Image 1 (cartoon, helix red, strand yellow):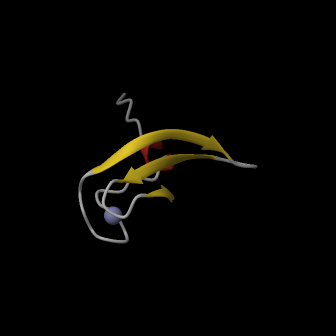
Image 2: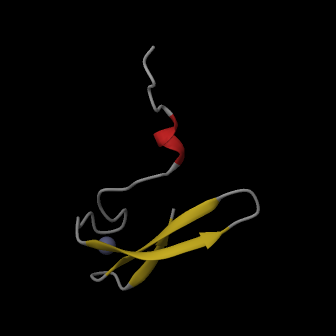
Length: 52
Ligand SMILES: [Zn+2]
């Protein structure tokens, strides 16, 4: 029997900033919402948090 982990899609991942499309974004931690936990990113170029 094969044990395939298919629950990896729960976390939303981004590769670049949606504002300036720079790939140089840094993780700023997590924030809990009502039902889910979201990853917070920070873009140095637009100097703002990216809540996704
Ligand atoms: Zn940006």
